[in-house]
Length: 193
Ligand code: IMP
Image 1 (spheres, protein in one colour):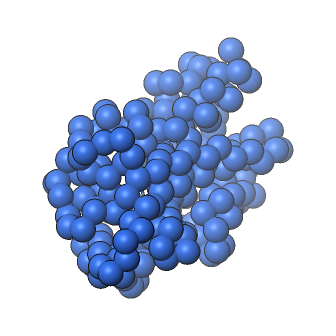
Image 2: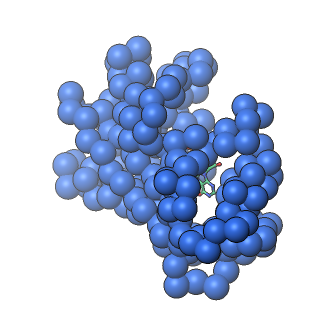
């Protein structure tokens, strides 16, 4: 059985491939000849994940899963959320995004935030979603060089380091994406032996 993981990130693919039954073969977007930009025009994280998984099913005929992630900040009513990648503009620059967020939160006492990942799986004509959430807070300055995106300004609950100061293995263990992937893997393992 073949399932497309709507990404071209080989590391992501081999990580998930190693956790699921051998008779499920994961394909990347490149593997199926999908080189176009997949539309992400919905106004929720869940909506975008579903849109991507459905797009691949409809255009290419493969069962597929797709992920979408956003950072939701309490004091900003959940912003940047689904707009996390382009919070400071279409250049999608991580430093600009962090600087904008730090400025917005400068005078706010409530720094609580959460990362949310939704994986949508279009599988045997059914659409399922798996959600992973990591709660934490936004720091007052950038710390750490690892990771990507907002990692230098996000400190997960119960930890003293930002995601960018942590080893990737710890981030994966406690993080939003790891949690959503674990739920997807549990579903696939229960379905196919
Ligand atoms: P995507 O849906 O995985 O492309 O994520 C959208 C945006 O959210 C990215 O461009 C990053 O700005 C941010 N983001 C997603 N995952 C993470 C993460 O694990 N750490 C920090 N930022 C992230």
